[in-house]
Length: 632
Image (cartoon, rainbow, N blue to C red; front, side):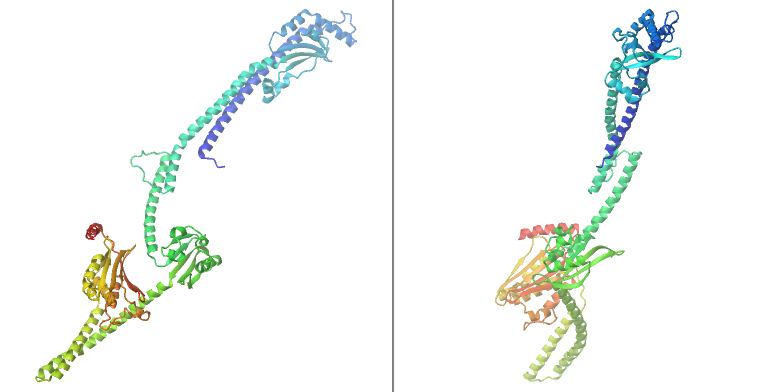
């Protein structure tokens, strides 16, 4: 179990206080016990010596006057016993001993066998006195032995003083000391000392808690700031905060610097993340970046179309949780991760017949795997892009060729026209048939000159006049311009436009001509009448225009050629309209695609990059939106 710093500080302070109080209490109690026990021992020893001095005369009895056989020990002992018992001073001393001190229990003089020769209790005189613990051992004993006297069972100890006569042991003086009074005297004092110790320890705990709170309060404030910083709440230091110069002030200053650095890094990271999200959102390829533990850390928006899951569901999950092994794509990716083997650009056909190009690269650093990059690409989209590139290359080549041909053809045409006019001047009289032939030759030469002029106009560089163009206005103008042709064929032109402006950076005249060319083609594809729908909408970073007709559709065998210059299926068509529209979209960095179903009609898709309006333009757009809504 991990303890908090505050708990550790409380325990440390309390332990020091407890140790100090316990030590002082031990010293106090031990000294009190030792002093009181030694005092009682000295009292008993003093009384024993008093008895010894009082019994000295009896012990030094002259046996020659008492007619006692000095060689008979029993006779000698009996004579001394009689002398002790009849000594009035000694008996008076023994009687007064018991009242001398409350701790004196009794006093007795015994012979070497322990028989009481003289006793303060007359009933015990002449009997063997039972041995009792020596109080000197208590004096020499330790703290626990002395504490046992106070808190243990009451008892009687004795102070002993040996007696001798003529250099030989004669007996002992035993002074009995009772622990009852000693216990009643010392126990309250020691109890008070222990209570004081307990109170001191409790007070120390409270003081330690208060001191730790006071000492650690700055640390708590620092901890709260670090927690907020860890949670992303990185605020600047208050301007009115009082400056401190202690350790807390130094740490706070460093945290402020760290917070400033984190704010700067967070701003940079936010900008990078925003840019990265924008890039990942615009990628056409499905891109997935995996960490070292095979967890998804980065997903492009297009990856949802290949995996069939939302980006939020894939981020942070294992590769085995994102891909299912029962799908073709999932089986290939999971097998590659199991074998740690790269996948080169490989085309597979997934469920539903869709063809996908897959590549997987494991990223290594210093020989250690640090992640993997999975790329998924729609094969059909790749082929469309390749076809568009090929078409652009072919159109560029045609443009170079036609510009040269037009230049070489134009000179002979001019010469023919000049000589034809000269010939007309010279032939004054001409028959009607010859005049008709000459007029046909002139008209065809003029038509050929217009064709060459068209070639020159189509291939020469175009200077775009870009400006903020609202495509809704362009579509309104196209609807008006196409109305006569539509009315002649019984076609209804219907527009589907949003209330908000659809602003792009474009050359309004060129875009209007491109949209009009496609609209006229759609109208002419419905000679029996129908509906032509022109719709526009805003996407994430683009604006799309859809032109939908109800004609017979475009045959599959000619779909690859409809944007070729001069390709047409109409008798009176020039084959320039769709080629020009395609070129206009290229000049605007846009795209032109179509879908066609036989018998159901054709839909053309024009995609323009969306413009980023300024603040003033944004306010004008809002006003335009309100005006457009009111007009609708």
